[in-house]
Image (cartoon, rainbow, N blue to C red; front, side, top):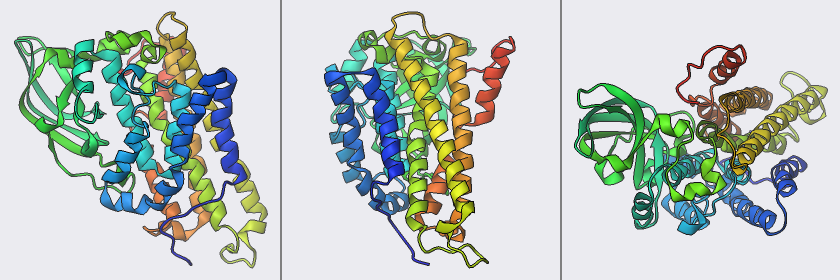
Length: 426
């Protein structure tokens, strides 16, 4: 058995088909210079795939994206997909973001995951906060580089004149925190008596935050998703936005006039985290096919590449991943279409349907990748094996609360049955 630390693949037919699926749909909905701009953005990410694959073990061992690689991604504009053009960003559609971040995920899932999170944080800034705040944070050295976490382990907050004091707070899963200069932290919003009136997101500068350096997992290690703590910190009210308002489509930034910043919040932030997963699933197929020649079926004198079992498995696996991609593509197009329509905020049932499709896509992907890992064999158990790393990365990624299938499927089914909504995030 040959140990591999990094794998470079030729452009297989499967990879070419995956690329055409992402870009072809863009070209069908946009024309001329817009389509060319979309392709240019995606090409920036695609050109990095070989390097990301070569450096995957380094990223994993370091527990974060290496600084030089992060700076290169930053220079290519790949953390500016949700940043308005007026602030130096690319301001892409959801469809283009899908194609771009999926390419990063093809290279390394941790890198794609951090890109999704940091672009989501940027979207929150430019869609939800007033212009003078945007101007100030955008003028930060190196620009705004944010991360976001909506799951506080503990957040004790009191009302104060002109804002709030976070007396004591702890948050986990801060993907990209080692490269961020601002963190969007979920906090309860309270009145003078301490009663919770709403929930919100508070923009907190990284120099006021202690990083716990506690990210120690079997997969997605390169995201550096460490926990953070904050104590006795005053946060001005203008740096806090209401969760209930943002989930209802209330925006206040001048950039909100662009369609991107009218996109339905919950499905946008959720679907973005699935984009790199789609790319990593494609790499799992590439890895399997790359190692297939010469490998034998255990206990039989038959090569896997010639076996009908392998052919059936690949047929089913690719069908599931293609079906997942089609569901996500349809959802991305629906989000763009609604945002561009200048009509009403996306109705709750439509938002729930996107969450349903995301959940089902996750299920299809994991069924496919589990089958791949099983067919790949015991080599996937080795920590240094590329299939094992991809498999573990995907397993950890799909544990994210927004991607758990059961929650999203139940949410849609409940609304279709005419029952009242009970999910906070929709």
